[in-house]
Length: 245
Image (cartoon, rainbow, N blue to C red; front, side, top):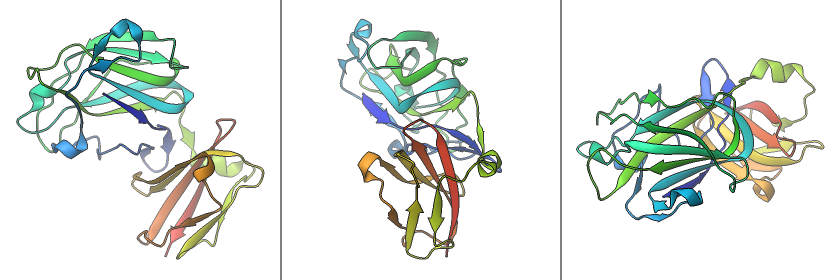
């Protein structure tokens, strides 16, 4: 079992980008290596008391969001897809204490190939949640452990970068282009989360709270275009692009 603290926002660039530090998929395909998966081999007490003890995974988005679709990649390790989750309860919560059941459903077994495409799970249909809890009832045959590769959660409304650029510019970065140290000008903004993504959507840096400073060392980055996303204390999303030389 595992608790993942993630922020999953869908932002419209030229393609959809999923801000998740736990994403291993590309073009909706997934690898078949163990390092790209979650595996539980020890039962523990479930965060939702009515579920008792067992194998479970808890997603913490950090804030409450209106959720829509979920896309699932089951445990895809070649020769061990029978560890993949089969029957599951999916619960959600806004506070981590009061839980609502979304569905009792069955996840498809993965195919074990290195370009596994996954499947859609139940739709949240706009329900608001900070936490999503996946509780394993059975798997596809291996009683020792239960695993899952990845789940992508999408929001009801996507955010278009052009729309943000038409608003008052609350944040900026300099110098831009930058070689070594990138400075942030946050104005009166109170940042809660910061994500740094490359042009393919991969999260390269995630900071929260007091970890967010006015200067970021980007010397290690390859030359190219990058995106900084900041979520403020009012849960608004602010975006700024920069070029690394």
